[in-house]
Length: 286
Image (cartoon, rainbow, N blue to C red):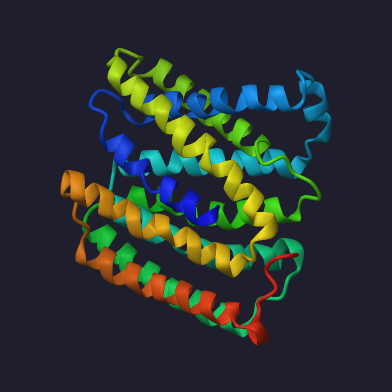
């Protein structure tokens, strides 16, 4: 499930690049509401129309998880208007390091020596990528992109720490919030004089790339050990830049490739170490 989710997630930037008349906020409007409208009937059916029962089971951490996902959705699309896909996705690779930090801060799970070494390596990769980004004049994009790995770590920690969680609830909240923010910004700015084709692409992106894989990923967080989940989700980091390079000839900078390689190597090394039976890092409750 995690591997499949990573592969599906990898098409996110390709769908955005395929639109011609939508800016980031317009795209977020239809993408967010697409995810919301795809999930809402499923929740309704599962609970036999009693949405009040769903609301009564929702914990504060479920709501926070949904808000974190919506923040990542917004940051990802907005960042795509400033920089290339590889820069964003390789930054995202630092998510497992962020997860280890949040597990230590919020769950009091020990951060091992291996995790600290990997974090130092990831930090070096970030420095290299940031230096190249500053030289390329995408300083604002760096601040936006940082939301994603931080959000990944916080989101995973919130999902794992909640006693019970309906995998669809964070998706419902995230889609509604992202769509509403996009609607407000677009209504106050560029409006919605857009092509129907592009609206269809954005709606499909929300339904197929958010509403479909994210609940499976949420469920897998509970049953797949964190190291294995981390490694399988790397499919998105590897494939997403490849798709846009293949279709739109979008090439990353040298600093992005070098810094990203350092960061990926740090994460893969930590994952391999933690998968060893005698070195399992306690970043999951099972």
